[in-house]
Length: 197
Image (cartoon, rainbow, N blue to C red; front, side, top):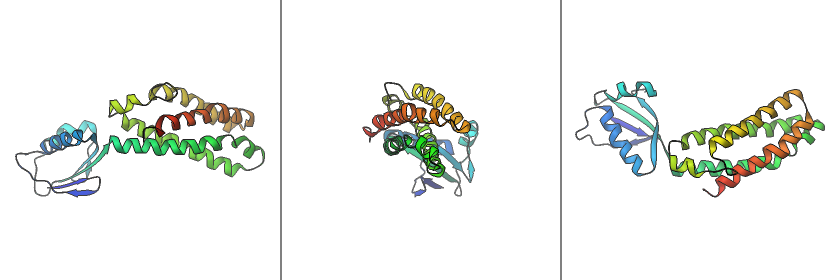
């Protein structure tokens, strides 16, 4: 059997394990001891979705069985949050320039900042989603006194208004949202995540 974890070929000694599920159970116990968990399983070249897990677990082990796992740890998530906090702080400083850039024909510069904001929000949502696999970590993150769900619920409404203002080319509203709504929330993300690194 070949086992790969995060791209690394791992030597594994099969003792009493008869199925893929037996191997996964032992590995998951080891990962849990290290504050980590499996987020993706590929068995013999096929990605196993959640609803296929039970059936895949019954697969008998063979010499040519190939198991590829992607594993995430609390430490890696803390690093991701800290990095995203750093980016949030940078973008927060840039948000206030957007209305001036749009009014002075520097649309390209404004678009670059907006694209970075979109990438950050996407990345932060993914990290938060993975963090939910570790309730202690997930619940420890408070942004402006709100848990992640509450924060995102509030923030997504503002981002929707911002997107509409951009489509309407309403530079006054864009400026107000960028400076008074988005920038402070990006700084709050930075404050909440930088201390966790």
